[in-house]
Image 1 (tube, one colour):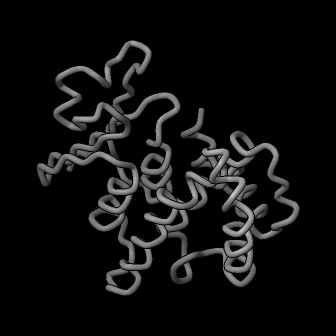
Image 2 (cartoon, rainbow, N blue to C red):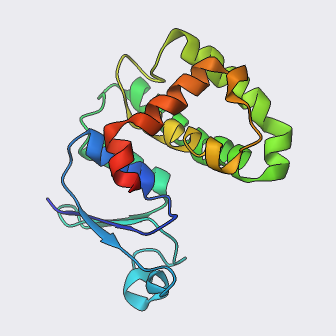
Length: 186
């Protein structure tokens, strides 16, 4: 098996990189120079016709994927030894979709942050009050997706005071101090 993950500076390759580090999944990282427009070259456009990062090629199955959430879900299902329960798999998918479609804009887009951020943090804080995990009793791709975005709050939502949400703050700090997360961010 050879997984080839295409990433680059300031890309959403963080999630699959962190997940594979946590799960000790071997892969080949191909960093593309975005300033040099390597992500817009014909060879990479065969992987992601939109020229965005990340992209994934799995030599063992022949699949080529783009979109960080789809990549994360694929790796979790095929290599991460996540739960085989259909309910758990559905919940993991739900949280990955939430992270990309709801949480991400509430962090990165000012108008969405002004409208939705507090409500999202209220719900997450309540969920994290009773468990450190979103699905089951162990860290999954769901936690990877959500916590990877929470870790961006101190950078992109500097005006957010996480002291209002102590359980979200704890998750964010644990992510920022996680050995594997710190290693992929350097």
